[in-house]
Length: 492
Image (cartoon, rainbow, N blue to C red; front, side, top):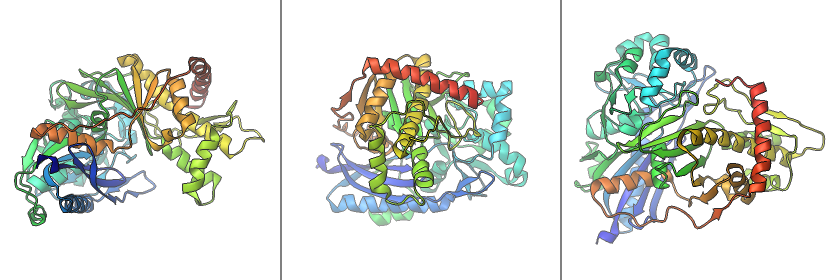
């Protein structure tokens, strides 16, 4: 029966790899996760083993597939999502020559900074929609050419972890438009590699994968483990896109009237656009979903990581009693006022809106009566002010949205949800508890495969309206926050 079909969404995240099997109703019928290991050093490296990730991908797929089939479901399609900006050099046979650099790798920072100061940097950004930053593969290539010229010369190909997995599945080097548009080398208006960017990076199209649409399909992977599992030969694999654009697809936020705000370890705001749009003054990203939809936004390093750091390294000795005490502190922070206490939450450096890897965190206005909940209040408020700063720039670029969809555990705290509604001055809609990346990958795969549309409610009934008097008061406090940033940080 068609009602017993399922589709599996695979997502390679920075900290974990997840596979989720979805029924046509949108119900999750199986889910398995494996954590990934990222290696860091004092030079700013943040690298991962692509072969280990591949094995984890196969493990979560196997476990999810077996759970779904044991429940009587038949797999029809697989959708693929991944984190952006990873890069590694490969040999002629497709073997990695070094560990894959992730988006967190800060070593290319000086290269990216130098590129952005030149006209060619602005030109590359304008044509590719990718902010010039250490995270960007084009900066990684330039750094690799300088720091490891022997490896750079030896490499016959450069690819992301996702491309590597796809190659091991199907024996072809292909990259979807969404991932290509996050490299800093892809012309988002003409859907091909941008020659000036390739010239700067000193690579050729022969060293890069062939760009394909995000709904591109393939069948019959070569890894024998698929056939050993009994995966039907007619199952289609959709190459999918990046986690960011697929999350917007899952949240039905692909037009300018809706903004999506997601808070996890990091933070991002994204809006849809029918055409490519960039802004040199803000360095907003513009990534491709398909030829008629672009996702425009800004990523911040400092989401929940600021609160996690504050709890584990300042308020406790080793993060003890986290599961109980952390949410209690979040709740208690709503019962106090920060008053003259401000937090600049840049504990992890910053991408948008500062684009300043060297940015640091600060508490200002501390007094003797301040307690733990005051620090938490100021940290949460600082994080939300930073989000609004990004959102304000996107609104200038694309117009004010009718609503903002929020996603993340922080918004389960009632006062935080009301606070962000008051700050933005627009309705806040709670996204249901869903994995946006895997769901978006499944929605795209089902559409590409011609399967029935999933009947799923992607918005909850909970809507929080702004209080305009509070909005005006928060605007005053936000301006004070911005003034402190202007005095203490060098915005670029």
